[in-house]
Length: 493
Ligand code: BES
Ligand code: MN
Ligand code: ZN
Image 1 (cartoon, rainbow, N blue to C red):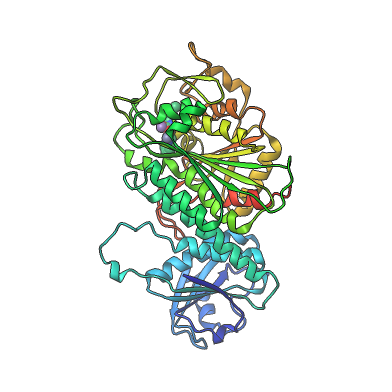
Image 2 (image 1 turned 90 degrees about the vertical axis):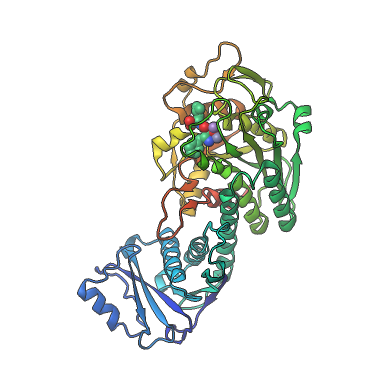
């Protein structure tokens, strides 16, 4: 899909469809369109057929006074509450509706109050994200599949920074879709080696350094926790390392480490999961895919902080070679772990990746992982859970998340929770008791981050959309790619 910025008067715009934002009628609310004859719109309001409520739509054909073939009114809700996050959704919902109706060229008109750089970026992001469908493996009606050829944002007047805003929005959304593509791949098509190959290809395309550690190298280094999880699978593990270095970076300045859980399939191992919904466990590499997507964007956006990404990619399988409950592994840090449940595998591979990130010189760590079912119990499908050992880094992550329009909630991480992390035979068990499972998982990771400022994002409830939204299809959400990108681009060392 081509994207562009337009400044032509709306009645001169030629397109299959023109999208116009309409707000709820109230004091001060901007009129939908001063520049075109709006009697039809007024009539819809008067009849109560259209109220301007958030994401409400009305489609008019051959609108008088316009060159566009169709006029789509889309509700923005209360105008005073309308922000870039709302616009992202509106833009996505409008694009999805028009795409389904076969529109090929689409223009979204932004009014005077809503055409800042932030708005332009969000509008483009919404459209590109809304254009995505995880239907790669559907061969039926391939020839009839609808696609949008171009999407333009029309602003009342050109202003400095708007073209750049368009470019940034496109990079961010395309990178988020890169992540969604990886997450939607089934486990037979995306093994740890395939994921490493995709990462390597992306790094070559974008000019990032890439290194992949194989099983032999992990054995040499002593990554016993990661290797323990990998033991049950015929598929060899891979530890993917990508590096972005800004030009002229200063030694001893902050160095961000992004770590993503890359379990390409989680059967639970010997502590096997029930078969119901087990198919979902192909998205257990969503944290890893998010980190790779963020790196793709950062390679183009060029933040001033160095960023290293680490993705331990492993398949968690039961077999004659699989690790057993009760096994004791020695982690890269030297700490020993008693594996009481082989289904608590994410924290094991992350423990070694976190230790390795510190060895590579990362001074600040953020991990993203579909780590626990317990975070879904706590926060549902709405908020990412954030656990932190450092207030300042947490602040950066939360504001990045807010600016990016992704929802993140601060969860507790208190030493009192450590009580349940006691093993009789090793330094640590890999599970706590029944309660507060998302916190004890985070507490386990904290033992490995240790003194290094660290934030853990549990995305088990948010990485996969269980139901389609008007602006997004069911499937991989690409969360928290935008948060990770913002975190790095906002960081001025
Ligand atoms: N990958 C799962 C967590 C998960 C659950 C992700 C639901 C997405 C949706 C993780 O490896 C896991 O199995 N966690 C266990 C931990 C337990 C054994 C302590 C869980 O949450 O049940
Ligand atoms: Mn598991
Ligand atoms: Zn898992």
